[in-house]
Amino acid sequence: MTGTRGPLNAFLDLDGIPVSNAQSGPLAGLRLAVKDIYDVAGYRTGCGNPQKYQEASPASATAPAVQALLDSGARFVGKTQTDELAFSLMGLNAHFPSPVNPAAPDRVTGGSSSGSAAAVAGGLADIAAGSDTGGSIRAPASFCGLIGLRTTHGRISLEGAMPLAPSLDTFGWFARDMVTYEKVGAVLLGDDPHNHKLQHPLVLDALDGLVLGPRESDEYRAMVRAVASVLGAPRTVAPLSHSTDLYWCFRKLQGYEAWQNHGAWIAGSDRMLGPGVKERFEHGATIDAATAQFETERRVSFRRELADLLGEDGVLVLPTAPGAAPLKAASFDDLQTYRERALRLLCLSGLSGFPQITLPLGLVDGPPFGLSLLGPKNSDRQLMALAARILSAHQRSA
Image 1 (cartoon, helix red, strand yellow):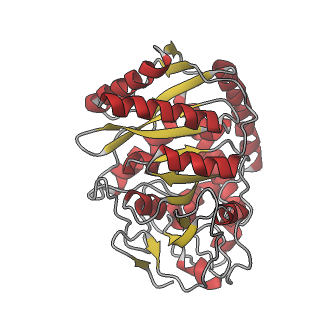
Image 2 (cartoon, rainbow, N blue to C red):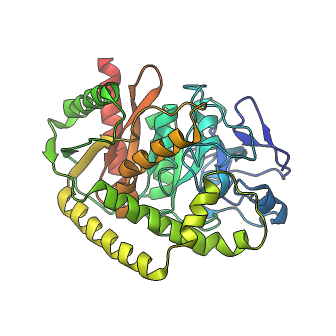
């Protein structure tokens, strides 16, 4: 691995063999980029860490979810940069030049699916595979003005992918338009097991401390009005659990599982982990099995509460992130503060395992600001269909 290539630092400069694809199919003619946590036959999987790359052998088979896209006609155009071991939310990897956010070049792309988001936002790929554990599809999509779905947990195979926290990890992808997004969804998801129309919007009563300021709050309310133009006025509901409790539940479970998967390798040598990533793994090493079990029980209770709130036809409407992407020049402490606030929003889908789609509906002083729809388990394609209606109505009114 010698670094990145291309004008946006989106793609890794890797040696590999040509990757074949079907010459016809629903995705024929579309260019596919793949996050470097997924195996692609003939390529090493580096996971954002140069030592991982050096130790890896070329993959003998392609991850099944990626192969399904190739078999549907998508054409592989390269592997994309990821935050180190996929354990970050900002798109800043200490080992590589930062990917460029085409929608706001002075701001981060978001991570860990950073290169995939940059490639699609910059027109270098039509679709790009990523993953979402704590927000790594939703945050970059919001920051870069893209569509991004965190799929129902377990619905798309993660065979051939680097695990971070398996009870939270999900496959996802980026696209610029809903037509393309739904084509990919049809290939990867098939029919929804959930067969109730999503028609009752809900909003949380209190978002204090979760959005950054008055302009972000005003834009969020404007985006909610766009949803209301399609579904009617939303019903306001009280948060089910304290956001700080859910935040720590997520952090502890993610940290515990991440250390179980990578701790032995990290402890085996000086892996020169970047700032933030190093500390998150160190935190994971302090969490014992009893704590993980306690937080798992809290998670099960929250999942039940959220399922009861949504019922069969409800959809929760919320800002994807606290605001626009942070500036690249922001201090480490400021980036960490933003991350902590973002996870209070992003952890709801992660802890429940329910699907959440983010739409490029808003702007804050120019940069993108996404709105999310969170639906019941296995309502992924219905969320996409609803998103298409909302985007269409928003574009007509613009």
